[in-house]
Length: 330
Image 1 (cartoon, rainbow, N blue to C red):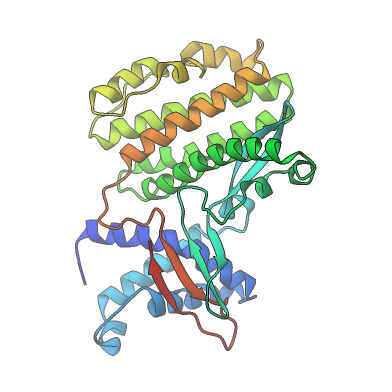
Image 2 (image 1 turned 60 degrees about the vertical axis):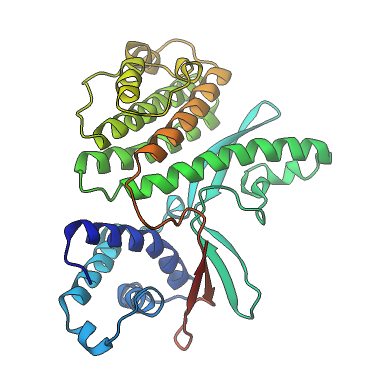
């Protein structure tokens, strides 16, 4: 095994991607909280770590490093809340915003008894129906099929953006650069908050939705700049930040999207007063999703492991007498 800090950072990122799903299965199996860290490590050893000599591995420094990563995740990362398993967004149905909760993992039955596929997708999978993720799913069932298909396409587009953003944020949150990690953690909160405020539909909520969209976009641009080894200018002007990012090789930022997002003094002023319509807030939110998706994808850490569409075949959730085994495909 390796002793290089950069390699352990990459190993930790892979484990941090897997631990939420192991954690969820342990919760479903009613494993006591105090036992979950040990059980999660047992599952990681059984499914993700191959060693030529198990006894030597147990007494090695490498074993201790793996334990520290798992223990730290259970100390700081294992949170029982809705945002752990889904990413809040919004969909417009008959001119009214409704909550959209996009699952961050993928599950479906495998072709073997007591087995299932799970994955960490960056887009909606063919087996999934994203209309089920909306808070208006029951009303949608009553629509004619052509209207359902149209709405499904819109929801799928939004869910694809959300999943891609969430996938890359997880990598960026575990960067050695603390500033990048902090910015990445805040972007998810800003986008969730913008979606929640859109569902409020009142003036203050719509203004807050625009402000949050502006904050998410600003942080996404600044992450790209930092990933290129530069310190972003101390400004909230999205146009100036966009020019700086593009000069460092960022993908071209659509200026029509950027114009839909409140910037600098306009964003600050709008947060505390003025008019911001539902259509304006929705346009700002969607523009923030599109710009953030492109910049975060471009800024993500380089990795020799491509797991954006990976799936893992896993046995039934582990109980007191059950076991878990896995095989992967992508």
